[in-house]
Image (cartoon, rainbow, N blue to C red; front, side):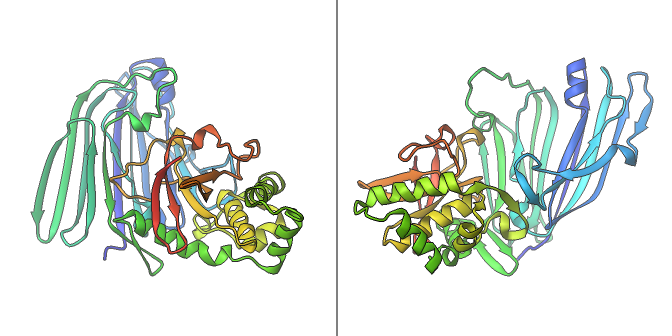
Amino acid sequence: SVEVAVVRKSRRTHALTPRGAKEQGGVAVGYNAWESIRSLRGSVELPQGKRVEVKKQFIVDSAQFGSYDLYSDSKQRTLIFPGAVTGAILEYSYEKEVRNLFFLPGGISLQEEIPIRSRTLIVSAPASFPLRISTRGGNPEYTRTEESGRVTHRWHVRDVPAFKLETDMPPIEDVLGEVRVSPKEIIWDGTRIDASTWNGIASWDWSLARERMNPTPEVAQAARELTEGITDSMEQIRRLYDFVRSKVTYVSIQLGIGGWQPHHAADVLRHRYGDCKDKATLLIAMMRSLGLKGYPVLIRTRDEGLIDRDDPSSAFNHEIVAVPHEGGYLFMDPTWEKAPFGDLPYTDQGTTVLVVKDDGQGALVET
């Protein structure tokens, strides 16, 4: 199987207006423990024709998600174009080594908020390596060639007008055309992830979380104390939910596999903090200690665009909890402190989610 990929990108933008010069005045390239930036270069061609290379002092490293992660190994390298003025041509290129195909770029948009003169995506891989390829919207030119055991795919668009944003429109990810390319199998530290089906995605998530949902005596005792004297199961669940959403502080620590694997429920209870998957894990463990059933739910919040049912992927950014109820599910989001029992925040509503069952199988349903 392929374990290493090289990602190269280059972009050349002509800033025709002051707003364009400001908005295109820099670029950020993300990386983490499984990605290395081999090179990042940039230049500015001034209206007078002089070309200025971007020097090292205009390239800095920082946290990628500084607003809500307390600790994270997701970083970014930012290049700032000095002298980005109206009429300047701004150009950059980079090369990354990706040692875990889970972090491969998902594809490329066929339109954006500025006009596109020309855009090309090239993907080359061994003929034996299984890829999933889909095109949504747009009408790119496509060619496929095979030589010396490698298959090369090429998509190209030209003279694409700018996309105009509208007030209260759906997420832009649901509107723009795109080409998506993803591996059907991923090897993560020796673990095989079947990324070709939703059940494969669910099974991998279950392997990371199942042991951490087992209720310890401390978790069971806390659950009994919170539900003392209550015999109605839904009222018991409400008591547990209210405790986790209001008494466990949201703190996100995304180091290594910790971005996908929750902490043990007992640790979350003891320290009284955790991120979305930690809160979900504690709630499920407390429910289990009382003989109640709850499932982890992988969700891509509505503001990030809809999940494509026909394109299995791990493109989720949040975790909530589902309880079997009246032929369907009652969903709970213990991360959202202001959401009372029975309600979901608006970002969780009207979206496709993956319910991870106790057997590691997944159910793709709508909230």
